[in-house]
Length: 184
Ligand SMILES: *[C@@H]1O[C@H](CO)[C@@H](O)[C@H](O)[C@H]1NC(C)=O
Ligand SMILES: *[C@@H]1O[C@H](CO)[C@@H](O)[C@H](O)[C@H]1NC(C)=O
Ligand SMILES: *[C@@H]1O[C@H](CO)[C@@H](O)[C@H](O)[C@H]1NC(C)=O
Ligand SMILES: *[C@@H]1O[C@H](CO)[C@@H](O)[C@H](O)[C@H]1NC(C)=O
Image 1 (cartoon, rainbow, N blue to C red):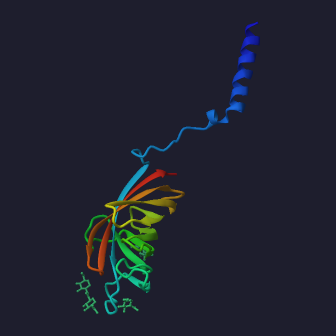
Image 2 (tube, rainbow, N blue to C red):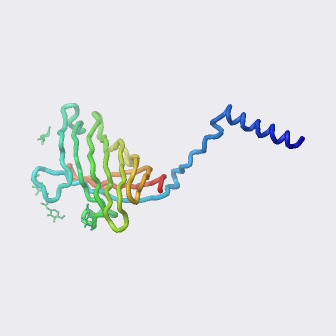
Image 3 (cartoon, protein in one colour):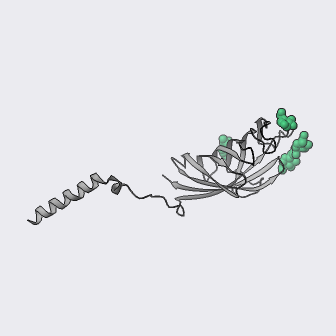
């Protein structure tokens, strides 16, 4: 008798699972406050002004358009910027930030960024690929870490950026607070 009850209750549970498959879905395994790895870096962008070939690390490859000159709509910049652990431009770089950004908003400053952090230090080897909208008028912006290689094999997470300093059109420094939620 008791085995019959056990059998029918198992059947009942199985039927329930079939009818309500959402019950089987696992809960979101990621907790925003609990990254599996957290890293802070700065990258330094020195825009080429037409003569400074020694120190410039980025250059405009498409110019501002007439749509909105004030907010640089259309300006596309390619960069290969030094990456440091603190905010000093001349600190020994731990890698490079390689990619591009373009301004894409008419009424305010907003850009779209896509770049790879290429690490080459005793601490880290490998890459992290980062992309997303850079809503410059916000104090902090979240970009997606969409993948990685080497020490960061298959990594995914969020890169919170903040403009650490900006000097006219020629230099800016971004602080990146990288939180990885998938580490292998
Ligand atoms: C470009 O920058 C360099 C280094 O800061 C400076 O010496 C030079 O005068 C600048 N050129 C222009 C055209 O602003
Ligand atoms: C390039 O940067 C170095 C280090 O900051 C500085 O000493 C030098 O004057 C700069 N060169 C130019 C052309 O601005
Ligand atoms: C880009 O556009 C600005 C203003 O529209 C102009 O002053 C500048 O010379 C242009 N730069 C290039 C490289 O064409
Ligand atoms: C990586 O670092 C090593 C040792 O400092 C250096 O020899 C090599 O050229 C660097 N590679 C790149 C791509 O920067």
